[in-house]
Amino acid sequence: MIETLISMLIFFMIIGAIIALETTDLLSAVISIGAIGSVASICYLFVGAPDIASTQLVVEVLTIIILIRATIRHDLITIDGDREFFGLTITLALIFVLFLFGIKAFNNLFDFGNPAISQLPEAPSNRYLACGFQETGANNILSAILFDYRGLDTFGQLCVLFAGIWGAFAIMRVQSRRKKTGKGDGNEDR
Image (cartoon, rainbow, N blue to C red; front, side, top):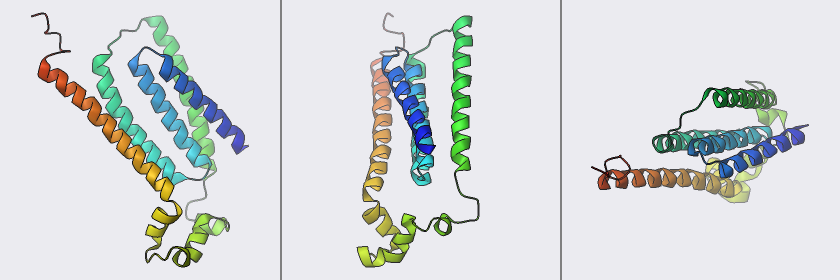
């Protein structure tokens, strides 16, 4: 059942990626990218990785805020009544579907107060605690988990954070250059 839900979410992410690539409206592309990241965070919850899901969601929210701020100045479009109703309908339908998937993922989590370690004897955390000091030689089990057992995951999370920061700096740098040269503010003809 979970595999089917994850497959549907991946299909939704592919559709969002196609929309982001094919649309000419920058704001629509940014919103599509935000939907992809939010769905990826729900997928991480389904596979039992809430730490990655929370990291993905935080990075996604910060990146989307920066990108919307950058594109809203560049892309001002008026919407007529028919397109507004159609867009609202599609948006509400997608929010409802994401809400249902989020409820399903939330229901798969363990009860509050019952540690997952006690409910899943095959959980990796049990192995980390039992064999971590012998296998890694680290004095701190948290460091052993972050850098030895889950080193690639930690590296991937850091890459996502740095990519978001670099993208934000690139956007702000282009905007500050435009302000310094006077381009993009409508005063070129004066």
